[in-house]
Length: 287
Image (tube, rainbow, N blue to C red):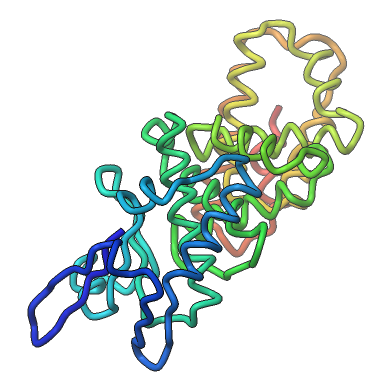
């Protein structure tokens, strides 16, 4: 672990061995690194069940005083994760107790990376995993992306019994097994339908026999509803279930349905103030 400081315009570091019992004041906040490290190890043990040794922390956890940190990342951030060097946390923005949460967030990225799925995931999945870990102890509001979107989608998952019935380790494996925003949306849609008796799944099974068409329709729904609230996702399912006819959709009809779902996304972008109900009537009225 290294502590980065800017003194008279020059950056220098203090090695981990010199930080035992070390306290530092930055912007009126006092940080005790012995407490920060012990809290970090305890939380990692509680969540993932393994001891993140002092040796590993000394290599993968770094602190920087605010002036240098902001110069390094060219922006005002609380922390960043680097695949090569590990977790970097800014000092001087929040008090020590809240710094525990910042450290856990960045160390969750490191654990995600060590487990092998990090690089194959997009930024929304990466941040969702870190926020999932952080929110076991405290909820921090994010107003920038990809963190904002990740948190909003995570909170949707937390409203669904199909997700919350799992313990943390199972939820962690579920989230870190995803690769994209579309896959997050697909998971939310599936769990939402599950809470309503799988009514849309039953409709789809009855109307679409081709597995290829089924995948195309579900992927189109996931892509269209990526930024929808649970209420709007439910409206979309209900509207699709009201499409006329009872017979199996022919290939051309299934393709037309897929295109109509994509058209809904386009209409939603063009008319953000229009109600979703009206947009769905435009998109699906001709089917």
